[in-house]
Each structure stands twice: as structure tokens, then as C-alpha cells.
Image (cartoon, rainbow, N blue to C red):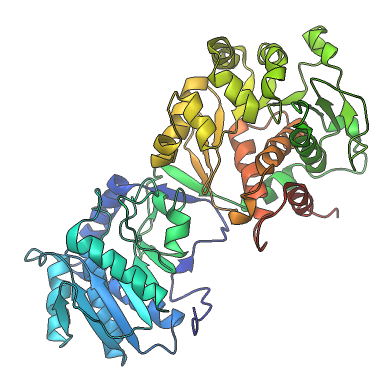
Length: 516
């Protein structure tokens, strides 16, 4: 927005992204428990005063030349945060207009205290939405908070639309705790309307919904202030990102005596006629990730050299019929452009290979064949490891759902169900990709951008997972998946417009740590 400052740290609050470490993520119940514990440690109204002051300080940092603010406040503590911020901004010379939506807060609550102090300060408070509001440099969305669990209706829906109209007219929108209308857990709008913020400041806990589904798009830049109350609870998930790339690189630094035989083999099963590009992308990604030898197993292999990647080797389909001892230790990346032509080989792989990555057509074949589903489920009992990388529609097919809508409605739960059903690690792709493994706390990836929304980017991810896994047979699939997804997303950040899949491989390769 015009005139908006680039703030990187403001009075103890931090921008969450890019990550410097993992963060715990919370839903509404765990956030309420942590809030209750924090309230018990402070005198009455202390915490809400601190939160409101933090909102005002961030507003001043974002709009150092701003003069006018519109505060849209609901009846709960979220609204109270906004009312205190309004008081603080007015005390610093800003012209502040307050719209109070809904009923007045209950007597004796923090929200009632915030409203009373705003009135004592002489601030103009309008009940409901007026026909016109004054032009504002900043709109503070303090309408709905953790308690929102159903679609906004009536004047609440009207207020959300008014906030978005203010943004369209050039105001910067700062949301308190989360954009109003966004589900705190799933990151999906509760109804047809949700605030689209430029910035969101969240308190005490980071909420899962800010980082997956539509959360990233609606929240804008996310800021966190723990209000002097460090969280002592792990939460329902964790937020991960680029630091996992460095962890992997430090653990796998190559010595002067390294050679290809020490870095494992990958076989990409896919690339049926007319779809060979998918296999080429996956195999090229595995090679660029650092695998020692990479093969492509094509249903109809003509033996011709691979375009621009002569290092890639051919895998004769007849080798799947050889004794599995000859190939069971390879990392098999299955499905990239394979179609139905890979069904028989896929069954063979599922029954023998120790490490398997399942993507695209492999997932579709499994979804439609109970015997392949059973073979996938039984792999864990043999001590074999499996990673599934579905996009939402593929996940829906695996779960027996008619469309991706139910998957997107609760991405964390869908990923958890898939991991439990197939006893495997699952990467549910999309904005805020979810990594789920039975018995492990799920992770939401923080890296990435819309530049990844191109054909073949999923094939690249599957191949990169295979390439890393070939070099590190002892790594847990959960850790491996978190690392690969973070790497995949980090390579796309900063790119304007779509990033073609072949170019994505080059961007990922460029993130390898330089040799010392």
C-alpha cells in the first residue's frame, strides 16, 4: 500500500515469516487454555491493555505518516483489543472512528473495560454501520476472534464487506488475532465473506488457520506477540520451513572422498507415452537433489537419451521381474505421468521396495484398486517406508470422497486420516502443505508462493524427496518430507509470476549449500 513502512520488528513483536525456527501451532481450545493461564497471572485488564497497545504500535510502525483510522470492533475481547488500540492511536494525534458491531460486552469483562475507557477518552463510537465513513489510512479489523465458529451473518457480514471495501479504496487493513470470518483451525472462510488483511497481529499463540488453506492469502503478513506469556504447550501442529534445509545440509555434508555409489539410487516409475515429461521432471529433480544414480522406468521405453539430461539412465521394465534383492533398496518414485500402464509394476514395487514415494497416477491407481490399497497399508508391517504426496483431489479419491471440497475444509484432519489409513507419511500439497505421519505431530510448511501453481511442480517435489532419501536411508520419512517440502517452497519465493517446473529444479539446486 502507498505510504506503508517496511517494519521488521516492532517493540517485541516479530514477523513470523520467514521462519528462523519451528513454531507450535494451536487451535481454539488450546489457545483458550493458554489465554486463561496468562490471565490468571496478571491483574484484571492487564493483558487486554497490552494487546491493544501492541496493535497500536504496529499500526504506527506500518503507517508512520498515517493520520486516520477506522476501527471495526465486535462485542468480545477481539473487539476490546481494537477499542484500546483506538484509544492509543487517538492519544497520539490520530483521527479515529469506531464502529461497534453487535451487542455491548457483558459487564465486568475485559471487553467492557475497553469500551468504557474508549468512552472516557471521548472517542466517537457508532453503533452498527453508518451510511458513510471518513476516509482512513488504516482499518483495524477487531470484529471476530477465536470464538467465531459459524458463517458471519447480518451486520457482521456487512462489516466484513465494508472492511474489504476500505482496503479496495486504498486503506491498509490490520487484523487482530486473525482475519474476521476465517476458521481458526482450518484456514478456510466460515462462510462466503472473510476479511482480506494486509497484516495480521496474533497474540499468545500462533493459530493453524493462519498458515494453511486460505489463511496465508487472507492474513497478509503475520506478526506475533506473546504478551510476556511464553507458551508452555506444544499445540496441535508445528510450523516448519527453510531452517530444515540447513539442518539436512549440515547432516549430509559431502567429504572429499564422496562418490556416486555412496549417495543411493532412485528409480522413477512413470512417463507413459504422451506423459514422459512428468517422469523426466521427477528424475531430473532426484538427480539435482544429489542422488548418486537416477533411472527412469518407462512403460514404453524407446531407449533415446533424455532431453538435456544425459546423466539419467534407463531402467528396463523387465527388471521388475528380476529377484527383488537386486533392486529392493532403490528409492522408487512412482506415478509421475504413468497412467494405467504402470499398474502391474506398481504392485510389484509395493510388495518389495523398502522405500517408496507415491505421487499422481500411482495414487489414482491405488484409490481405485483395493488390492493396491491393501499392499500399501501392509508395507509398514514389514518395516518398509512410504511417502504419499497427493494434491487435494487425489487425497479425496484416496479417502473415498466425491470432491476435494471436504479435504480442503480441514486439511490437517484429511492428512491425518490418510496417514492413519495407509500407515504412511503424507504430504497434502497446497498452500500450507501438511505433513502427517502416524504417531507424529503434523507439520504445516511455511515456504512457497503462487509461483508453484504450474504443471509439473508436484513431479519435481516427488523426485526431490526421492533424491534426498537416496542419500539418507536412515532419515525418518516425516523429517524427510518436511525438509523436501520446505526446500521446494523456498525455491519459489521471490519469483514473479509462474515458475516453470524445469526452472524450479534449477532454483532448488541453487539452494544447495556451497562446498567449503
